[in-house]
Amino acid sequence: MKAPKQHAPIALQPSYEVIARFIDQQEHLLQLLQQAEKANLSHIKVPISIAPMMKLQLGDVLAFLVAHNHRHVQQAQRALQAAAVLQA
Image (cartoon, rainbow, N blue to C red; front, side, top):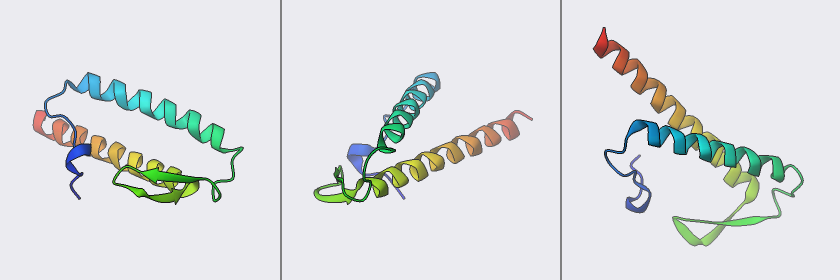
């Protein structure tokens, strides 16, 4: 599924910058998950960027983010495997 235009990545960024930003975002997400341990995940509502009028439960948003980031890691693994095949 293609990302909405406002969420599409900027083309031709150096890979080290993309990886560094992804790691920073993962560390921030980890901090948020640790803070969320003390919160009522079904009571807190969070607006979402693709439909700001719509609000989801915090627990659902965090579950989506973790799954979404897992998808990015799988994409990176496939890219590394494809690059290894090309170099062989």
